[in-house]
Image (cartoon, rainbow, N blue to C red; front, side, top):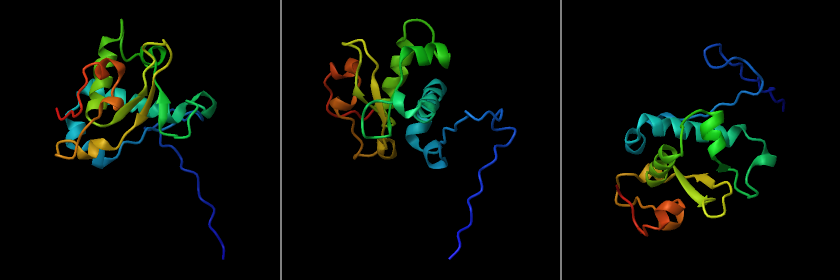
Length: 156
């Protein structure tokens, strides 16, 4: 039995500048057409795309020391200086991240707020249930700011 050698995908000129360090942040049709994704603001969608980039562009040695590859850091330096998404104290970032969490795209595994360390986030597939009776976000999936509110079910 012979195997065909897999041909490497060649980036098209409209997709990239062609640098070897480029990574993609795929977002599929089913997500874009979902009720949860459509309920996000354009800034929240942009933040989600940058979270996906953070997942794929960071070397494994700089990722959280966990077993699950869907976990990632996203701190102030990244969203303010590297990606230039937000300015100021971060109120906009935290509000937008809160909406990504409450709509089932991301969950907060460890908030760095009290210890002043990087927060650890993880991608979630709960967005697929958004708008149904089965959709719920538990308090342990929220950021520290939201955990203080103590909701056991969020169905915005």
